[in-house]
Image (cartoon, rainbow, N blue to C red; front, side):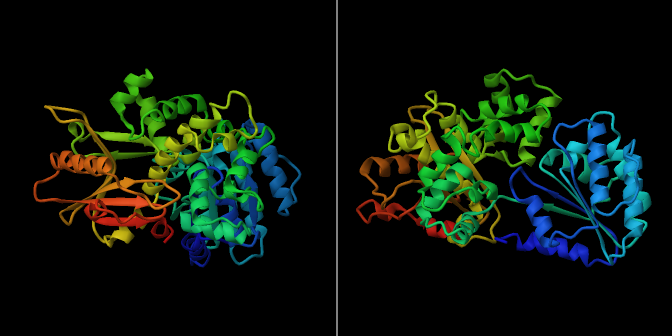
Length: 470
């Protein structure tokens, strides 16, 4: 298993506990939740079940009964309610001779169908049956992260504070993707891995589909643009599997995808013609929980308001290229290489990868122990000064701010006089909103480093992709 050492140990600690444990595992679709749990316990469970997508309560209960039978249940009657279903599970647990009864319920959100009273039955099972013993390890899992958080972890009813451990599975880092690629015998260098990350992010399932003998660009065509490709319809399937009204969520991410640095709630409402109500708050919260967007506050912004920025690599790639493939060209990606659209997207996508590796950037700068606020920043033209936009600002508590510029190139980046002047202008505009005592370090992040010329000396910090792979 690549990575997941911390999460695996958390599960093993729960298994070795002297008391019953209730563990919630969550994370976006395709992130490897099921694989983690199954591998950790070597596929041995007292009971294992997975909810069925879009199935009514009757079918969910039939599937539950089938899982009970598969695990040795001797009863012949299909449960008529979730109370019955969990009572049968309790009897199965009682009959088990295992020292530790591991119960794994996957894709639990799909089981909570309208008027099924699933959550109340789960409450009764845990409070009156499982927690009354010392030998039960209940693991619940689901891709609908918002459901797990709101209905299980932050439950205000009978499950309040009942979850004993939470495990949020994050996407792979560049380092983990590199290790995974090597385990699959993919002969990709780090430049190719970054190109793959800009499309697939750190979603293990997407990387598992890559084929050796094909370049990363050929793989993208085969998986996404070929009509029979495994990821050809992934965008619709992704949102449909996570949200019960996917069209509302797609509308929000579509609007956010138009602006690189993100939007405030007010801008989102105005530009997207979206109603300002509690539903929007839920959508934004759900998207943030699932890792599709991030919320941050940029210094100098209007009233320091929260900004919502779309961060999901695959979603942004879909908007930029898949939707634009009007000809249904199966080699669309290869035919797009080195076009102006492709080159512009590379730069933006590389910035996003850097935002997803802020921890590695901080380590490269030697500031892992320093409190920081990280944000993209822009200012409009005013009083004879032209506007400015900065890829990333790392605002530090040690009286320094790193003005980070990301330059995606397959060779050493050469600073020009025009670029040097732009960087100095951005630095001056940023000084207007930062405390006067704060120093600003111009920091360059590139795949291959910087050409040594007369302007290179103005760069305080250089970070290459090798340091992103830490």
